[in-house]
Length: 237
Ligand SMILES: [Zn+2]
Image (cartoon, rainbow, N blue to C red; front, side):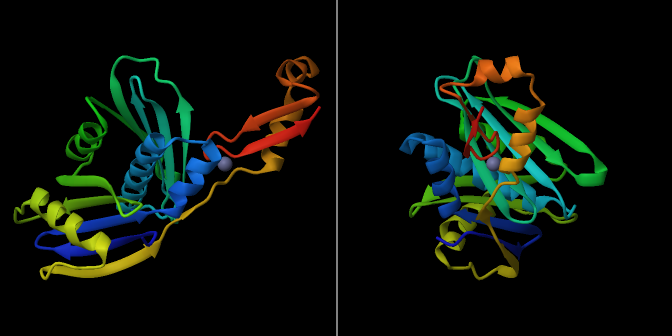
């Protein structure tokens, strides 16, 4: 499955189709995830890429954090430039499932929206129907070792059946087919990546007091992980 976001026009709506595969493999590997955890993180990364693609601000960045009782807390970050990464943050302490989406819109500021619900599908479709300013619908699933997020966004004017557009888009677009009434607009590549660096983490470790460093160290080493991609860094103390 290609790693990309494709945009189409159909009836009176814009359709987005995000497909991911290797990017999710990289995240799963760095975080040491099980198959079930990978399946969830993959869908969340596809969702974050889709929300990023919907933004008009060039430098937009989206972080989607989902908390599922008994399953865990996952976070995926996608930049409008096409870079995506995800982490498993650990067990979920709360009793309620929730999805928090933070949009960083560069000079326009940062916006956070939270929805509560029952499970992954309920939370993500709830976000689309309640938190976006325009009528929209989404469909997120895994297929052929990859992850897909389809979104339909209604344009001003005539009504159209967004659920039906999403369903037909999901059955065709990820598999290199295009419904007759869809017009291709553009596509852009997606890939795994993170802005973390050894230098930035070293500055954090250097800024700690010797006592703090001693507390974190084990056998003369501090082992830490990037909060965005899960990459492991080791520093000698
Ligand atoms: Zn990182």
